[in-house]
Image (cartoon, rainbow, N blue to C red; front, side, top):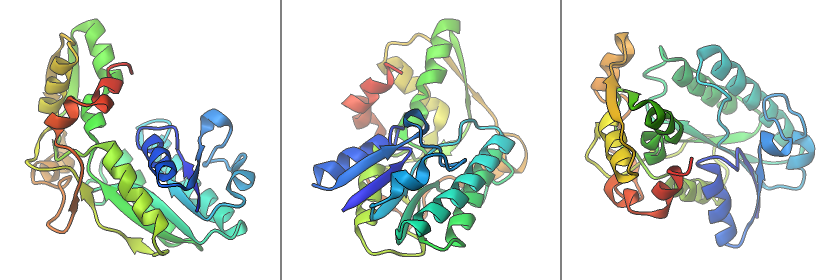
Amino acid sequence: MRIAVVGGTGVAGRHVVDEARRRGHEAVALSRSVGIDAATGAGLLAALEGHDVVVDVANAPGLRRRVAVDYFAASARQLQSAAAACGIGHIVVLSIVGCDLVRSLGYYEAKALQERRHLDGAVAATIVRATQFHEFAAGSEMLAAGHRRGVVVVPRLLVQTVAARAVGAVLVDVALGPAHRGRGPDVAGPPPPTWLPERSRALAAAQGRHVTVFGAPVPGTAGRVIADGALLPGPDASIVGDTFEAWLEGPDAAGTARG
């Protein structure tokens, strides 16, 4: 099977590409760095030609509400249009567990909008929601900046993080399966849940970064629903991958130290 991975050079995307190739399929990484822009459509139609399925794991170029909303709305529209024109019958979209419950936070609102646009599109889209990645707890850029200043501020999110590598394998499973319009099973890492600043402290210590990590409360309704477990997996979620502690000992955590 030929799989086009939009955002294929990113945290999740590179694992999708590697896993698909490991299984003997052809996977092509599409990203802005190689001249393919899913939001503007630049280079997209030619890049998708001849592929059987699209996996969309691309990230917005910023976390601000307007930037994220504009990007995900436009990229969903462009991907649906280009996939339909190329005769592709299935798009697999990575989203976030609980994004529809914390829409007062702009990035989560944008992901919920992306889901709706794909589900309303001409091409069947399967939405796979995952909890935050272990790598998100890493926050390599955040920790690197904090390493220079000695202080890191991390949002106080109650999370049950998952290894991006494990999510990549799930996305390949879905891409190789039959086309389906709707939600697939949510994906999360092993319990128990914990607060994100605790995971950032553990990673900083494992990487030998001497920083002080402060947890910043999320204000308003979003903070309350997050504290109540809005970002945690439900009882039917698929639990995959290493625990955070085991992941800390592996090569993916070591890779974030170079970020």
